[in-house]
Length: 137
Image 1 (spheres, rainbow, N blue to C red):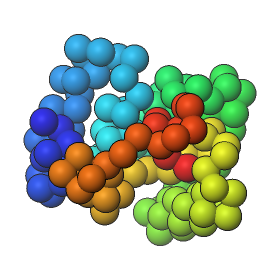
Image 2: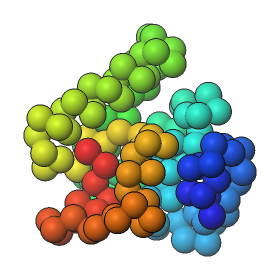
Image 3: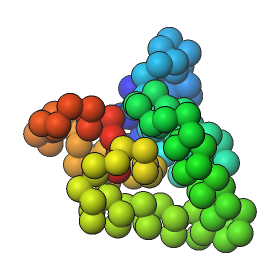
């Protein structure tokens, strides 16, 4: 339900539903990633970065790698505000495109457009490589 609200642009309800999902299953990485996306939409960047780190750890990032990437996002946000945060997100997206998503610890916030493209109603198919279904980069 949280993803539905996210796709519809109702970010407050999305946050509520995704937090409820996490309460039910705190080990579900996509809920953390989508909560991060909803939080960025309402301007709660530092909370979003924390959720990205939780999602990354749950989807296989090492305990050393996830905090390192989190620190990069936090530094970008603290130096440049929302623009710095989104610039870092763009860099992560470009990195993913250049490297084919091989390193799932270099994650980014899933955007609404990303979620729409991956929606089951748009012919979403599981990736063929094991472990990449929760890899956002």
